[in-house]
Amino acid sequence: MSDLLQQANLIAGEWTLADNGETIDVTDPSDGQVIGKVPNSGAAETRRAIEAANAAFPAYAAKTVTERAALLRALAAEITANVDELGRILTMEQGKPLAEAKAEVLSSATYVQWFAEEVRRARGEVIPSPWPNRKLMTTKHPVGVVAAITPWNFPSSMLARKLGPALAAGCPVVVKPATATPYSGLAWGVLAERAGFPSGVVNILTGSARAIGGEIMDNALVRKVTFTGSTEIGKELLRGAAGTVKKVSMELGGNAPFIVFDDADLDRAIEGAMIAKFRNAGQTCICSNRVYVQAGIYDAFVERLAERAKALKVAPGLEEGAEQGPMVDGPALAKISELVEDAVGKGGQVLAGGAPHERGGLFYAPTVIAGATPEMRVTQEEIFGPVAPVYRFETEEEAIAMANDTVYGLAAYAYTGDLGRAFRLQDGLEYGLIGINEVLIVTPEIPFGGLKESGTGKEGGWQGLDDYLETRYTCIGGL
Ligand code: ADP
Image: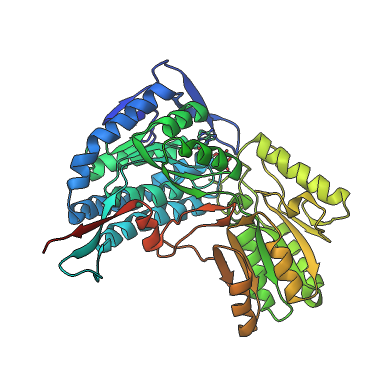
């Protein structure tokens, strides 16, 4: 077995099992086989991890930015050097095609690299004083111990966006990866040790979400919680954070509209729709959930989208040429089936897929449903699967109104050849991330984050670092 496939918690620089000796099976979603076991930890282990992080904080925060940047660069180099192995681990536990898994791992390295660079510019300011003989200034300081809770759909890169800025800023971390995909997260522990991070700066533990999450939220030593996951759990954590007024970053659910206007470049729009919908089998918070197509181009669009969807190679992620892997688990597959049945029951026409894939197991056929209407559940609920409901619209105003008619506000995409319209969409769409004639819009340089119930805080950009720093103000008088 690979030495990156760790099956223990990393707490205070030691790899240990759960106090009760219990483990949780981790399975490969492509065939249901058990890959291994990870500790079923609870509150006591979490408390120790938090205390270890807190003990490591002063010395780690006292390191210069160049020292911390060097550690982060070493971490990025470790990730890059192990991309093949990390990619295989990711595919095995998560299911996505190997090429996508490796791309995710490499993107993790670029996030770490970005924050290594950005922290050297984390400067405060000197403020012009309205009073004589006084100096007013701000300085930046690490927030303190950070707890990171990550999801199963991007088990590597979601960690990179949290560990990268926390470690750059000078904050030790306690990480709880998703139970379905713990190995990509635990591997970060090995890589962090190899990169030379001091003991206690990176702590990672697996187990009961409720017990670990409960301790994280209640423990006053944790000064920030950064979470990516469902809006439902995010709201619970926000309530929990109130008890000790922790800082929070929340990357929650999405319901991305994908709007195609009559004047769009159809080839480009189809290309974009395929990526925005079927990447990671649709299990992405920025995946298009609702496809809105203007009447003049509607029939041509749905026909071509269905053709392309039918041609996707659905296969285990490690199989050569796989383009869409399995769903993560049974409940995810069941929810997708339910949503499709609801849409069909309300008049949707299935142009591709519409049922679990003939391979069986957790595979679902890439699906295109024409004639989608606002009454269907897919209009308001996150599908998180390879299903594209396509709605018809007539005017720009109508499209913007429908696109915004959701509690979510993460990503939105639109295809148009009209420059004026592109700018009107920029103002009109209530979304934190907007792609016009482009779906590959995420990179470490930009502030990723949602509006409305999609969350709070940014990941990436200078903002993604600033979210891990406190601004202190000092006034020196009597000068
Ligand atoms: P998703 O299914 O989209 O990953 P979840 O919100 O269910 O979304 O899970 C995201 C992460 O949050 C996972 O690591 C999960 O184990 C964790 N989690 C779930 N419930 C809680 C909880 N009550 N407290 C803390 N973490 C939780």
